[in-house]
Image 1 (cartoon, rainbow, N blue to C red):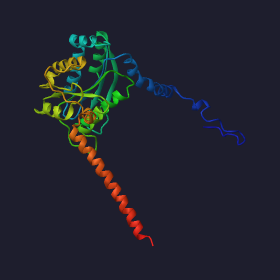
Image 2 (image 1 turned 30 degrees about the horizontal axis):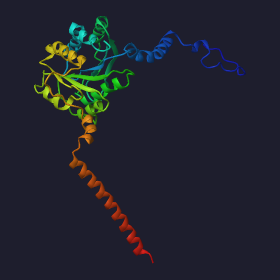
Image 3 (image 1 turned 120 degrees about the horizontal axis):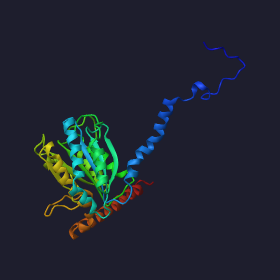
Image 4 (image 1 turned 90 degrees about the horizontal axis):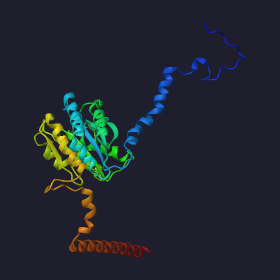
Length: 311
């Protein structure tokens, strides 16, 4: 039982008594909280240095993807990173290094997951990153297919990384088209524009497991930017081979000979004034002149009415 405290004795200072000192569990929690910013910054720090490419691998974990299919996606990425042809493509770049980020996504307004950034500048680094990514846990909640928000989140990984490279690419893989929202969100067209406005190209890996026309949908609605393309996997069993083909092409940065790639809409808007014909320029000048005449006439009409209303 506690002894009564004398009325004249001052209360002990809060936090200084033996009973209020933090125990081992509290100290461990405090240390973890203090270390959290360093852990968040560590992946970007590990990827620092000159780079040829920033590549986000955006993996579908929506409700149509079971745990085995999720593991096949990660296994395909790991197998591709271990492939000598992929490693050779990395080594032949100007800096011989790329940075890779794994992003896991599902329904539009549900949280996404990211592995952080990993630098690959040789076979040892490729093996280390492959081993980390193939074990990445499935932490996102299953749901619909929110491609627009996935693109926005992937673009944020690049924009907020503190890293730079001459090429920035989002590589989105999935087995279905975008599903209707439960509540308002960014759709695929808006997410695409969000990335392209930041100078980020978008490629797609269409897994033809459930939707036979998914590749056409990706070509029409998803991809954009310099050299953008769609790679196709006939099913989840074909992902490793498709991922290998796609990574080699993305890392080398060369479109297939004779292929027509779609330029970003923002580039088309930027080049439109320079491409105006003389007739278009003349019509634009005529419209501006007519607008000026209309404004002058309106002002003159106002002044006329004011004059007529004066006593």
